Length: 280
Image (cartoon, rainbow, N blue to C red; front, top):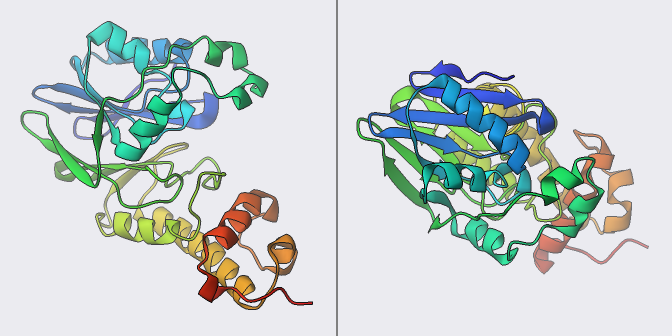
């Protein structure tokens, strides 16, 4: 059973083996805020038991870092137990959650734990914001910031200024390379991380969406890799290399198998002025 470990004063993180998901608790004199709620009702009940065992106070708010299922499908468990808590997300992420209409993504039917996931009642976020918002926890204030598009259009990070902690969501990952999916923005992601890095110090404790605790240097390294991917796409397109040949012709920092969506989306997102007709 995972335990919540205190990674900074009154900031606890529990790492769960399923999906390598991290759940973060931030404490103040008025109670606790939870960042992300995991990916099913069953798993969220495990998290809820861990929160009770920690005994650091009642939950007063939830935060969903983005709209992917493994970060918000546990919302209903905590809303049912603690009442109608505010659930914060970016406006884009909130709208994407609401747009599900309580229906599960049909792609999840192929997941190894599909029955567990599809048995979950979906409760989306209910407090949206566009760029930044502060949450008052009594004796400390935390900041929710939408730094730009990257992993999704609606990623947020959570900054705890007095503890020098940054909860990065899936803009940064440790257990694997950051996932570039069909709803990602690979050309914008590096600049988004530049803004996040500008909010850090060399001592910042960084909680990734998945994996172990990292630091500013680790985030900088991932930003460099994502930047190489973005610039390689721009270079190939400017030389007239068609998207269908880009994975073969590019020099990539990651396994090209991980970059199929990145290349397709990168070519689609490029302005016409940065593309040439394909070489014959």
